[in-house]
Amino acid sequence: MALFIEHLLKNKWAIQVIQNTLSLHAHVPIRLLDRTKIPDNIKKLKLSEITSNDVQRFKNRNKSPWITIPSNINPMIEYLRNNTEQQWIAWEQAFISAFLKNQKDKTILPYYNEDMNIAAYPIKIDNHFDGFLVICPCFKEPGNNSYGRFYNKIVRNFTSKVIENLPKKKANSDYDADELALYGYSKSWIKREQLQEKRDILGKTFEDIFNIKCELSDEANLQNSSYESISQTIFAVNQPDMSDILSELLEHTDQNICFDLTQRHKDNNILILKKNGSIKLAEYSQERKKVWIENYKPNKKTDDMLLKVERILRESGTAYGTLYQGYTSDKLKRFWNWLTEEFGIVAESNKNIYERIVKEIAQLFTADMSTIYTFNYPENILEYKAEYLQHKDKDFAQTLKDNMENAGKDKKLRRNAISYRCSEDKKPNFCRALLSDGTWDPPEERTLNPQKGLISRLSLLWLFP
Image (cartoon, one colour):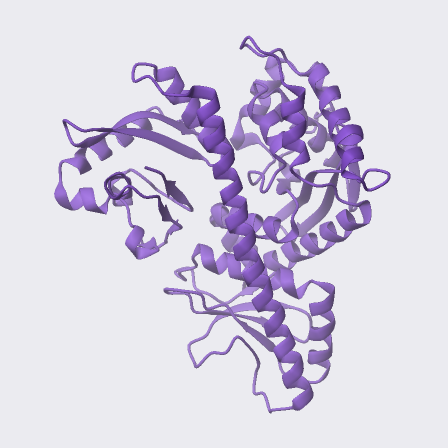
């Protein structure tokens, strides 16, 4: 029986979905790091010591020890990563990698200075994975728990020290300390003991997910919603209240506890929590309940505990939906505010502006790729303007252009293209995933056939008119 980590390493976008889900649930920024990809000669560097050679060295994502892109990061750190000519990214990778290269235990360390902290949890799964869950970074608690002190003594102190060592911007204006501080202030501090607790629960959750004994076939059609459901369930199982209930449940029965993960479309999976503490993922086709015990005989006490488990899971799912809506809404507001303030009305002839916008969109949404098209009314087609792609491919821009223009001239392809539906219906469109069988989730949000070369693997797609 294969471990779930084997499946995940073949589908790294699924690891990103799991990380994003857990990050929102825990209210902390997280990322996964592969220790085996850290160079032996890695050194901690000061921000002021980062050179253009360091930037180029850390720019190669294929050689980066980071497995995932960051989830739920502080807007201030997001700004520093995106607006310092990659100097901040190079410093951060060197600093964290050098510290964790030979680290064996759970730890908390200062990030840049004493105003922010990083928490790291080592994860080793047989020969499949040797790395860390990294919570990076969170502001420390101010001395008297006042938001005034938090802003003035913690956030402003941090931004002032950072700006002293940042490279000079090519634009005329310097970095705005007030703006940077407001970005940082939008996320609250976290107490050290809370950071330790979140680190331990998240680390245990990742270990449990990676160690799931998977009975599903290679052709099993797991969707984004499957990974979200698995993550939410195991995260809930590892909460102290839920853990106590489940321990008592397992004491009262010789059977295994089963969690129904059926969500939508073709999902048909269950998680089985065994009495020995292991977890199994399997298919289930009989009549389903939310949570049940195999071969269960009704018992008042056990029934009450099962109801408590169902309530906790239900509340956890509802909370996640609210968090996800709030998170994406906040990102959209920041994007539109930035777009209006930075560019105003975009001139048709200014290609550099399109390239800047498309890069900002990708970085704002921590996306691997983004593309801008404009609608040519006389020709009645979408015209390619610019694209941003993490893994640069010289032929890819031409492929994007040709596919979109060809689709505009064919009635069937046009309606199949989500970009054309978005522009014609004048409303946002959202596609969650391209599934392994070549279909779309949800089916009504299909886009151009991936076999045409436009998309080889999609985990999330947003389009805005």
